Image 1 (spheres, protein in one colour):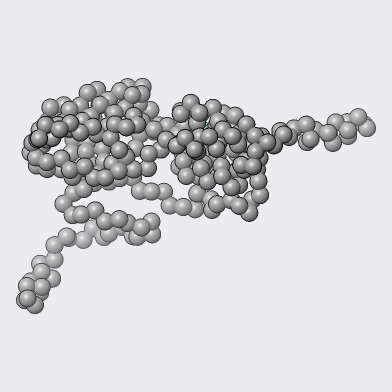
Image 2 (cartoon, rainbow, N blue to C red; image 1 turned 120 degrees about the vertical axis):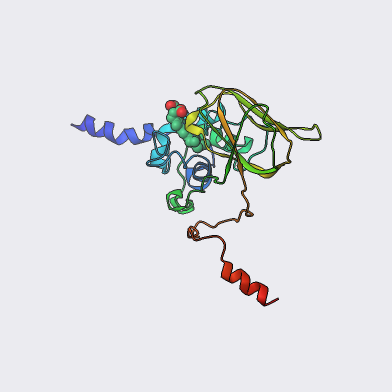
Length: 249
Ligand code: HEC
């Protein structure tokens, strides 16, 4: 019986890694994970396990370091440098280094009072929506399109894709390249800046997939806050109001 007690008393000490880093879950790592991983690694998310709390993430620490060092997580389809996107999901070098050092240093928890608000209470960014212009290889645009993003479907897992535009002045404009497609990471890709494609732009598409430009539509896109209610599906034109405006001129 005594021996049993001794073993139990000694185990928490042996179970602890030696902490050799000042980086902690509470301060640095939770912020990176909430920002870059929680959209999928949350209850009901696309990933098989949640990584929202220290207790959830700690058993995965080794695997987390491995996945980010190998750039397998977060999964992000577009090849870097070919087209420019908002919210590029790939971690930057500093974030990768911070995660790796935290894991190497024993993955300490830190003090909970430094934790950021849980991402579960934050609204997810709305996926990019708008009228879609389906494109095909060799398609010449009849009208100009202000493209806010590009969406891909029906591309095989592991498949590749390259989309670029040949502007009327002959300049080539890279839009999207995917080297190894992962359906689980497929979202509409929003360009960093809306891309203006004038009429007579020639589109090139290599690869077997359905690809659509997401255009800004007729009305200029408005930034919507997370709490803004959806606009009612009321008729767009109000003839009475317009007449009134004319009268007042
Ligand atoms: C777009 C959704 C998505 C995002 C964002 C994402 N993951 Fe994942 N993750 C997945 C899916 C799906 C799996 C399960 C299968 C796989 O590997 O694709 C997974 C698996 C994992 C695994 C387990 C790998 C194994 O050993 O099987 C780890 C660890 C992981 N993710 C860490 C991360 C980290 C760390 C981040 C943020 C830096 C992150 N993930 C961001 C979707 C995502």
